[in-house]
Image (tube, rainbow, N blue to C red; front, side, top):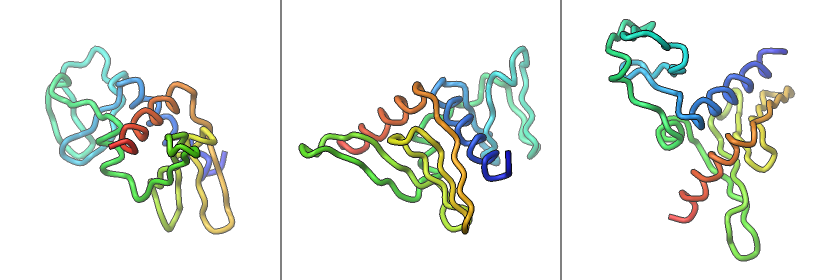
Length: 137
């Protein structure tokens, strides 16, 4: 796998971890933490030096994730304007990255290079649920 494919894979894995309710975020630096990596630990120490009890960490949901990472949303709707899918731009310019629920993939463009990595069905359903609710607001 090249670096672009690895980048797509990491985003897909992070999204799956969020969908499963296992992603947390360091309140100091924003580092993403898979709570499964902290199993059997009482204390958490981030690379930035922040320390706390593991139980004090707050879970990261799609609302918080996209609040920090969303540049644009392209909605696909049917003739009755009912939500069908979304393509969320989470990086722009170098590289440009979309989380696309229609193609069920994280898609990346950087100059002439293109890479993508598939999202599992559970993660796509969770992301669609989030964006459908946002669309219907």
